[in-house]
Image 1 (cartoon, rainbow, N blue to C red):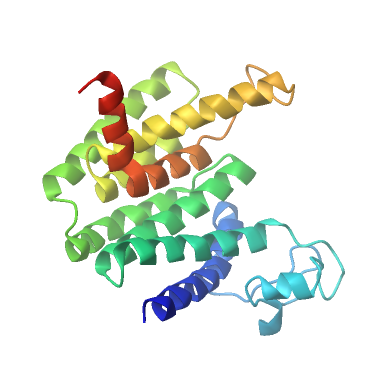
Image 2: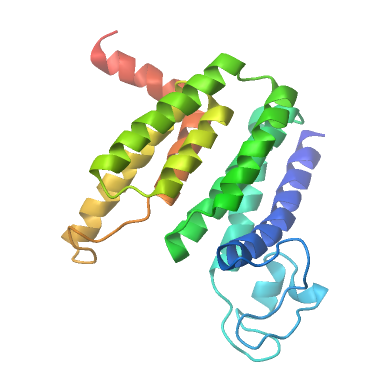
Length: 250
């Protein structure tokens, strides 16, 4: 029964990933999300249902549009696969519960934020607003983070990143996104996620500069690193915190 549930979760995640690709493409361009058939970005041809089967259509078409033979971005199968793996991870960790629903929604939104930030250096306000609106009902259904912890996570996170934004080239989208994530993860796990995300961004930035790919003043989108930090904090936060305390001698 467990394997059937995990397989169903993975397949559902793949299908949701197909929708997330639509969100990633349309949201930064101000286009509608719910209405309108999917089209090839190159030739504008309306795609049929068999062109939109997660992962399989990309493999079958060999990464090319059926109608104009233009290349299909690697982002499409990658987002579908990541969405499926995130759904699988959440299902395995939390089982069939509202907690799993809450965190899969959060991770799916972070996936969208990561790719819009990578492609456009932008975390859309509409995405953050949807996360904010649904944080209360999802939190009430899950009941894994108490109200005080959620407010403390959002308040401390928002205040800390707002201060960083005053003294560094930190984007406003990063501040707003992380503040809303605080309502989902609560204190101290949101703050731990930010620490991990900033640490990973710093390490990657140093590597890119050492390789000559980036210069000191070049901008690196922080959204994907914050998303990874929040993921690590959600799944391994207690272990990381315990290791850190042992490292300090407590």
